[in-house]
Image (cartoon, rainbow, N blue to C red; front, side):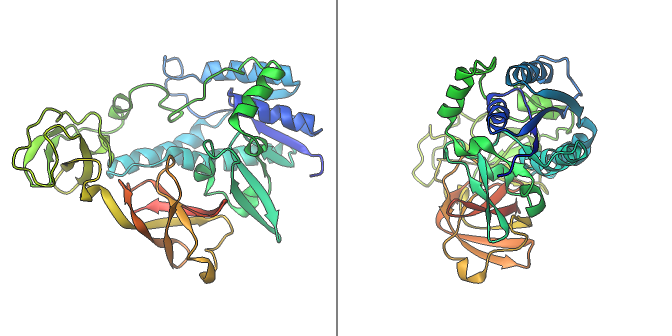
Length: 367
């Protein structure tokens, strides 16, 4: 690739730090940008934005690049957080990281970088971009355990044409080693987990501020009331912790479950404000062979050709192996997936993301 001016999103983490270093090594003109996406409780123990900026600035110093602090909090609140809250209120479980990538990192940040005269932007995501036959393909990162293409599936041709993912070619162990070799101050910093605006705080405590609680019954698959929920928005399908029904006796219950088999959230009925829970990880209510996804986004701009629909696989949640599936499209924006093997706890609001081998084709929101 010809040398260019690249604006790197520096988060304060090790992946984006090594990204900036690698691009500088390759001879590109590199500029760092720290994105501030949340400021409602900046001074709280849970929000690490200030510490992250200090780390990002220290990285820029070692790598020898300029860094700019840019505030996207207003855009984030409008385009990501508002959708997050409304999805939870509707009883679904959204994935704000996917929306943040589509709306902030590869839209607001990309636009800002282009105004700075950038040819490309780069982030520390574990994914790859390949140009083939005039098209840009989104590929999985080489480190399968760190691959983040699932979170990037809404990127389009225009965005991918301007994007670089240097650490997607590496394994995490190599990234850590590079960081130590060049004495980056954050070489041993642990990876951030969870959602940026929640940080390490308890999720229910955070959601409480924005969503009202309407308690109601928890019922089992026989229709028996076995407990009380605090509000349907606070639970997700497949959830095992925090149900408060652990010690319940289940005499007379079918399906061969023992008294002590764990309980899982299996269904949410918004109309009757009922949470349905079942015992046992492999209860039939937790397994499904079909799903429908809406609001599809195709990396190539259109669904794959009809002759290629048999060899595809999908993820219905991030930490999951690719599951072979058959794709049926309804126009460009709706798909139906059928799986030979039942999928566990397929959750409305999460994304179903399609793959053809290492190529991420796109995805949509499970309905």
